[in-house]
Length: 463
Ligand SMILES: *Cc1c(COP(=O)(O)O)cnc(C)c1O
View 1 (cartoon, rainbow, N blue to C red):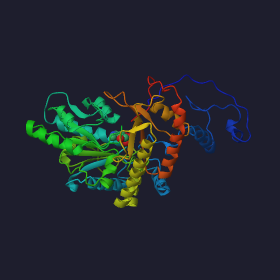
View 2 (spheres, protein in one colour; view 1 turned 90 degrees about the vertical axis):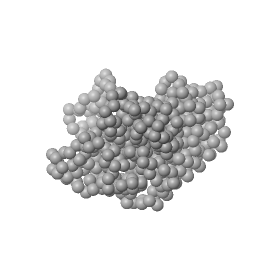
View 3 (cartoon, rainbow, N blue to C red; view 1 turned 45 degrees about the horizontal axis):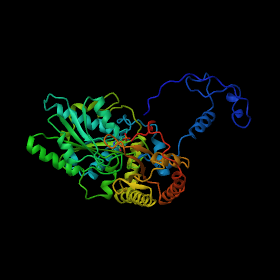
View 4 (cartoon, rainbow, N blue to C red; view 1 turned 60 degrees about the vertical axis):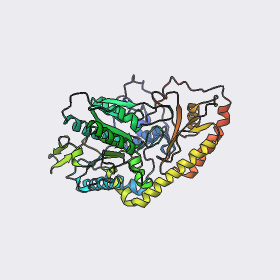
């Protein structure tokens, strides 16, 4: 969330009366300025307020053409209906809305099953506002477990420099030293060897990502786990892993069934996912599951009795919408295992088709193909000097496509890429339209003298 700051107040404007537009509303007939900094003195009729606010929102991009986001932009009308039914339910009122609480419990169990929890009766888990909150909770559990060991140094967390910003926030907010493994050459994510080299007795855990927000690649979770097993044999340090499966924990269980990245690996203590990414629900819902009670120190769980009943909660926020949780359960009921497999495979098929077609256009080189997360990154070939990925992004935007361009972190800041996230609802047909537009802008870009983008102006792109 951008932190907003104030602006000098604007002068009032006095439009004339237009009988067909604002004129139909007496409140707007005389002097009217949309409130930017202070409330209007009087109220407006609901239709008028709706029209005015809706009109301003026309300036937002079209969510379906937003290929930057991992977050769901299309759900079935039935899911919208269900969510509308539940908008007045607060998730925290578990005693008042016991059935919503029951659906949350079922979702946690379903996820624990998908992620191969060895002892389903012993797992712990909850819904959150998204993966960021889920990661904060998982990180706090790691930190508390470590602090019980009675070690005295400053706690640290080992992860790749490609982690999503929530992990840097976690470290800053809760005073844990981030040990970020840099990228090197064409290794764009964490490796087992590099991770283990940075571990010591104050390492609260290692975070592995399934998959990386930068390029959609899966990190080698099993390899990292094996290296940590070996480290334990050598040193006695028993360092747990958390898997940030914001996207992949909803993909791998359906289309990479043989890949052991989850609770099948005894070292994996906890896993999070974003229900609102490939869990196919509108924002905001996330999930976190701990493999057993030992992985979540009991002090972190609060029991509240002032809503009636006695409910254990582990969350940063108190009130939260219940609609997304109901919608998550809807997707589970609606799709089943086969349905999820079909949806995720369809996204992967479109992603691999699109990446191959983009590679064939000539100027682009792929970093990834979209065959892990249905997400891929590409850059321009070294011999392309007339334009860069920022120019491509800007040109596509003229047609309404939102395709982000950004530079890679430390040690590969020379590398700038375009990234495309294929989500449910981005069909082969839309992919063909994007390709046609891309092919159309290339001749124009090739006529440029050089990249037009000033890289010193940072793009407001958040991974
Ligand atoms: C999106 C993402 C997050 C943050 O998730 P939100 O649900 O947006 O809070 C964390 N980690 C990874 C790997 C992500 O892709």
